[in-house]
Length: 424
Image 1 (cartoon, rainbow, N blue to C red):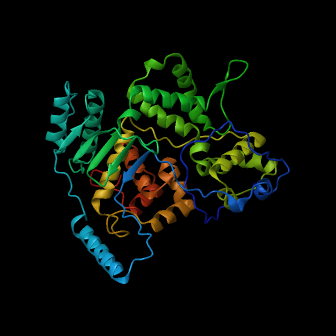
Image 2 (cartoon, rainbow, N blue to C red):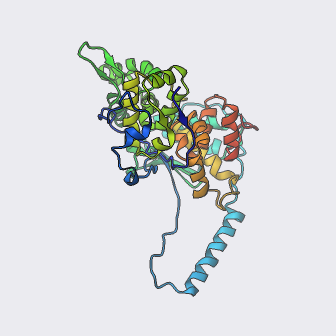
Image 3 (cartoon, rainbow, N blue to C red):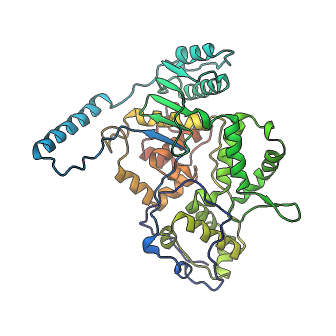
C-alpha cells in the first residue's frame, strides 16, 4: 500500500478561486518512490504561501490602521494603550451580545406583489428598519422567504439584520454578499443579475467540460466524478438553452460547478478522497507513487493541482464525491445569516473581546489536518476560516441536513449558533 504521512504543521489557507485546470503539470514517473522526487524541480523555499486571498463573501470590519511613524513618544503610546483598554471594556460591556429575536415562532411567507408590500413584510415580521432592493421585487421576495425560513427554524429567536439591501460597490474579491458586524447585510447588485450569473456559471462549466473528437463529453480526472456526471447534461443545456434557467437556479449552479472541480477548489479534500479509497491506494501502490502530505502542503495551490492531475492520469484514478455547497436555493442568505447569529451571540468572546476569532485560533484551525478534514466534508469554503466553517455548517443545517457527530463537536468548539433550541 502507498505510505501516507499525515503529520503536518503547514499553513493550509486556500486561494479559493479555481485555477486553469487544463494547464499541463510536471510528469509523474511510474518509478517514483517518494513525492520529494517529483517535487525536486521546484524551489520549495521560494514557493508562495497558501494564504486565502479570495472569498465568496466577506466581513467588513473597522480595523485601526498601524502607526508607522517612528516619532511616537511614550505619552502617545500610553494614551493609545488606555484607549485600547477602554475600547475592549466597552466591547465586553456593550457589544457583548445582540439580544435574541422575539418574533412569531412561525410566519407564513407570502409573495409580495409590490416593493412596498415586500418592505412592509420585512419590517413588520423581522423589525428590519432598512430594506432596500431598488425595484428588484424577485430578489426582495427571495430575501423575505429566506428570512422567514430562518425565523421558523429558530422558532422566532433568530437575530435579524437591521439593514439589508443591495450595494453598488464593485467587490474587489468577487464576493456576492457581506455582513457588517451583526446588523447590516449587503448583496452586490451587479453580481446577482441573471445575466451576470449566467456568464459566471457558463464560464465555470466550460472550464470543466469539453467535447472530444467523437462528440462525447470529456470529464477531467481531477473533477469530482460523481458530481461531474450529474452536471454534464446541465452543461449541455447551458450551451443550448441558456434562457431556460431561472436566476436562482443559476445561483445554485454556480456553487455546483465550483464543487465539481473539487481538486481546484479544495486540493487537500481531493487528496483525501483519493487516499481514503482502497482501490485508489492499490493503484498508487502498483505505480510506486508514495505521497507525503507534508511535502504536498508545501506546494503552492497551483502546483498541488498539477501534481494531483498527474497522479490521477498516471494511476488512472478519478476523484469521486465532493462536498456540496448547493444545499438550498437560499444558501447565500443562510450563510450570511449564520454569520449574524455567530457574531451576535458573544459566544466566542473566550477568544477576543469583540466576538471575532483571533488570528491565533484561525491559524490553529488552518494548521489542523483533522479539523480541515472535518470542515472539508461540509464544503471547501468551510476550510478557509473557522467563522466560515460555522456559517457553512449553519447553512447546511438550515437545509434540513444533520451534521455528523465529529462535525457537530467542531461546530460546538467554535460556538456555532443554536438552531431550534439545540445544535442539530
